[in-house]
Amino acid sequence: MTNPANGLEPLFNAPTRLQITAFLSGVAEAEFAVLRDMAGVSDSVLSKQLSALSDVGLVELRKSKLDGRQRTWAALTRKGRKSFAAHVAALQQLVQMAARAAE
Amino acid sequence: MTNPANGLEPLFNAPTRLQITAFLSGVAEAEFAVLRDMAGVSDSVLSKQLSALSDVGLVELRKSKLDGRQRTWAALTRKGRKSFAAHVAALQQLVQMAARAAE
DNA sequence: CTATTCACTTTCCAATATGGAAAGTCATAT
DNA sequence: ATATGACTTTCCATATTGGAAAGTGAATAG
Image (cartoon, rainbow over all chains, first blue to last red; front, top):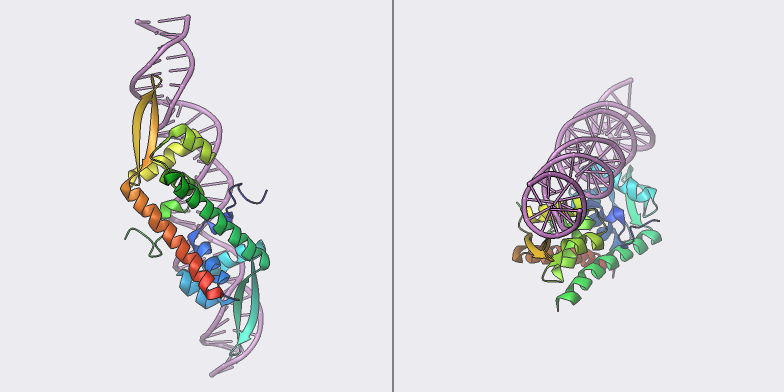
């Protein structure tokens, strides 16, 4: 009921969120500004995408102070890591199914 | 000018077209009905997606007769195979970048 | 030889999605 | 008291995706 039977997580199809997630999967957590710059989007867009991921429990947002100013840090939750791994596996299956048939 | 700098082919982001393309990458060509059923979409949707891929030269459509009735066959062009390979490579890069950073 | 049927194509319409700009929030810093 | 910084929300405009329905052209059926 969650995924479209092919194992792909809908939220990970959009390139921006895929990039964000892939990046997060490689680190413990990342700063808002770092994510925004690596994804090449505006503040508002990143904010909305992170909220979307957070709303479904794939990402956890933590607010903390750095240099007296409030900063936001994002991290994949355990669920987020699992979901991303499943997504990647599904992608690989698609590709490998193809590669196998091509022999 | 073609791709969004990350190597991903925009047309391959949508799951439906990714599935169609992955499938086609594994075979010489496929029948319209086979693709429609494997992708789980309606005639109109498959027709439009194939046209979209064909419009930019990623897929070639061939009309031929089988049992007296006209059938449509789809095949990836050389450009389509290259583009798909690049897309897959870009996906793997995203994931591997992540995996490497996670060590 | 007109009527159907088959195999798509196109057109018509929602429903979403995506993105930036602008305005809004809420702590500091001045 | 005002201005900043760091996001958040709201407002829009555009684009995508998908199905239903109507349309097309070739090939039977009657």
